Image 1 (tube, one colour):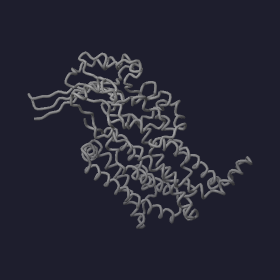
Image 2 (image 1 turned 120 degrees about the vertical axis):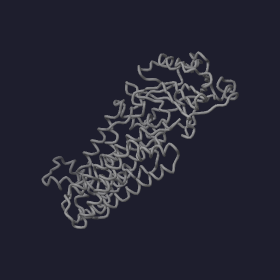
Image 3 (image 1 turned 180 degrees about the vertical axis):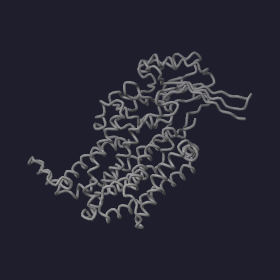
Image 4 (image 1 turned 135 degrees about the horizontal axis):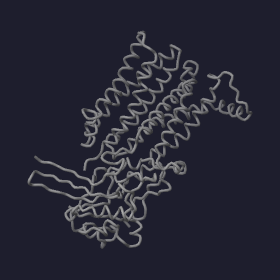
Length: 177
Length: 313
């Protein structure tokens, strides 16, 4: 079991529905977010190109946050999902400093919080909230070990990239280009 | 003209626009821990070499600072924790890959050792001290018997404490400024230098002062070498490391780093110590105070600037 997600940067319109869906589904405190939309525009006018990405925790295979955690609160759950155990987290901030994507934040209650790939939903056979709600259907989620899962099928068909592969994190969040 | 415009919808507190998860507590602790490590290492080293009488202050008096330094440092660390009631989780886990776990366990050893070392020398500052209870006297006898072993533990764990404060930061590859293995030796050298400066502050014996001024000079030389070496490494590195170095070479941290750390904290005390060794009269307080100040500023600037340095994507 290897959970992964693919985001189609050619379909995403940057509506931020995924952000709101996540905040609602996971009761994310006001002003914070576990996923967010990035727009990168480059080129020379009028030849401009825009890439829109819905970003979140990359659930890295070689996760620096898990390595740095002094208590083991940051850990790999079933399927390679990177999670934080609230009752083991001391809120030292080491994992936050270690993440090149800045995907974690301190929860107002003290522990460190982040994207969980909506573990509570996927255990019940549903997609994560961001994937489910996307109006352009630009996100694909599934198990990389299953050749018929949505994510495996789309990654076979399309070109893709990961964010900062040179940081050596081996991310599980793919961006279709 | 080719342009790139980057817009992110994320505005998480303490994460955006630049990371600021660690405030004054962490650099303060890194300084206090580093200085305590320096004092304990030097005390243990001279005791092991059998020079406890020659370097009386360094071996028997300066270590009295360390319990205060370590307790204050631990307090700062505790204030930094956001989920405070779960701090004990540090001591129910051993994570070999996490420098912070190493550090927590090192502090668990070195803090009691520093208290015991002071207890063994309490009569040097309070000649009429009496332990009152028999079991405390027995305990003192026991530790006195194994004082050499205690000194070895103090030396080894002092070195680990001094170097881990740098490794703690260098283990984060997400922050290019920290991600250099020079930081461990640099922080260790800076801690040893602050430790030698503490003895310079307290010692009244001219021979001991001369010896520690010489030691301080050597360590300052090593520090300057390591700093130059660190910047050479950044500038010969990848784009993100070049960007990190630029913060200090024309960027926002240029003035504070070169003036407070290099000039005031290293070069001026080095010159003053050389003049003092050449028999010029220099006020005894100035060089060690500047060294300690530079050591504190080094931690603050590296911790703050490191959080600003990042990967570009």
